[in-house]
Figure 1 (tube, rainbow over the protein chains, first blue to last red):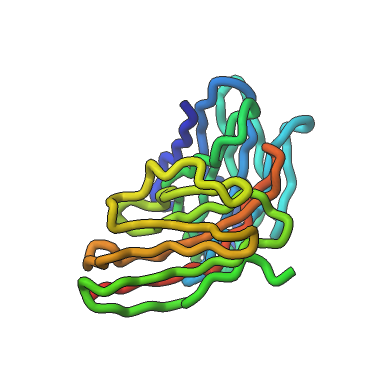
Figure 2 (cartoon, each protein chain N blue to C red):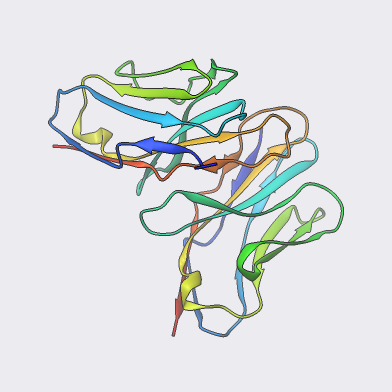
Length: 114
Length: 114
């Protein structure tokens, strides 16, 4: 079975500081990993994904994520947070093995304070 | 491409009434997903289709919920009769074949049952 954990419901960070949103996963084989962002009254938007290759993945809006197989983690990071980054962030996983749906985490609300 | 298009954006209805939510996926996408988002439960997968065929409807909460995909460019989610606890934001998403493909979400339908 596939699962995703986002251990923090809320993350607060000051503008200009680095931010990290945590994600750990569980799959039976190798994972496809995704991050999505949801702004108020909007649908989820794709940020980045890890399929294979370089463990550091760069995505939209200056975000990046690091795949760590030994820790089964895929934390989202940004070197310098903006107030406009405030949103709800979802991590998702799917096993390479089949065409099963993505399994989403519960989401982490990021607040960037000016 | 205009993306995944959902209608209506907002729906307010009285308890007991029938509600129909609509979705037009991205052309060429083989998979279509219906999700429900609430504060309490987060993002829940209700049902998904592959090539217009329902694959897994185990997330549909009750027999009051039904979904159809009569062709590759249109899907509906129907609730009959509606209840106040059905109030939520309903999202449609689509993706191409291939496990590495991410989802494209629509903007959602905010349903309020009074």
